[in-house]
Image 1 (cartoon, one colour):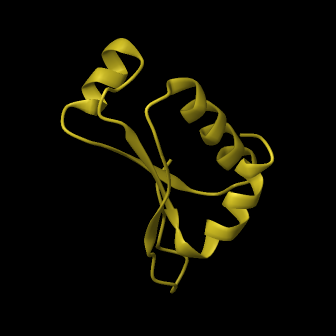
Image 2: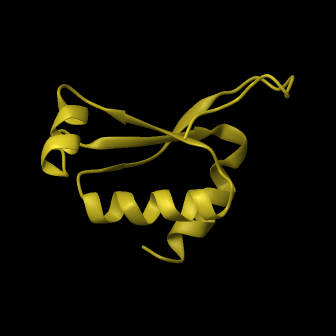
Length: 82
C-alpha cells in the first residue's frame, strides 16, 4: 500500500512502526493496518526485498513505516494482537 497525497494538504512524516524478521508477524501487522485503513510502506534492507519475494522472508529485516499521525493508533492495535 502507498500514500496518496493529492487529496490532502497534510505533510506526510514517516515513522518506523516496527522492524520484523518474521514473515508471519509481518503478515499479521499488514492485515491489521489494512483492516483499519492505515497506509504503510515496507522498507527492506540490502537485498531483503528480493529475498522476501523469492524465499518469503528476509534475513535483513523489514521496517513497517507509517504516517506519524497514525502511530499511536497503530501501536494500540498491534499490541492487542502481538
